[in-house]
Image 1 (cartoon, rainbow, N blue to C red):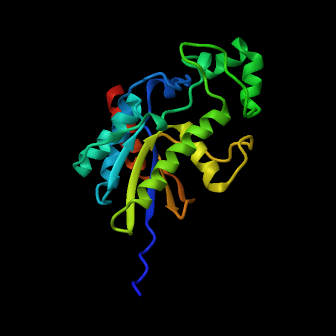
Image 2: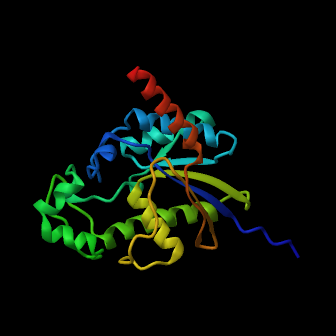
Amino acid sequence: MKPSQPMPMIELLLIRHGETEWNAERRLQGHSDIPLNQTGMHQATALGAALQHEKLDVIISSDLLRAQQTARAIGRFQDQDIITDPMWRERCYGGFESLLYSDIAARFPMEYAAWQAHDVDAHFPEGERKGETIRQFHHRIAGAVQKLFKLAAHSQSGGTSKIAVVAHGGVLECIYRIALNLELDAPREVSMLNASINRFTLMDEQLRLTLWGDVRHLTALTTDLHLHAALDEL
């Protein structure tokens, strides 16, 4: 009898992109294609440096620029290209996009109330793009996770693959809910930090959370940026 093959497993590093000017302004991005600001570029470099000794088999990115810029910074330390996949895009917020969070409630009070109540089938007002409900967004991200399961199932080694996916705050929240089997309308439990590393395992079609919101690699960067800002004021 042949010995059984070890079940393939994926170590998933789910990473939120670095900071953008719209993040700093508290302006809703969604599918708006906003680049990293200077802080975000420094964060992306710090991410790459922090992960340089972890051999990543694949680096996948949302096709939005802020995610791609972050992923490419990681890829430079790994000496590999990135794969872009629009399935990992942020949720589309329709007419909310480009607005300051503080202005949304005044302009769209009913839609804002439904959004804050986590109404899973509530629609956003029309904008440049058609918004996604929570249910539609969850379905898309669940499909992206299924693609990773298939990748593990077709692994020739039968061992462990390590994959980094660079995406967005809404994607992080969606994956968190999937891993913990939370209802779609449950209140948010955790923060979605820019340039954070969030670790999961994928095995036997089960997604398990192992570490959330790791930003230790940004500690020295924050100190350095504050020092430079202070020196600039002298």
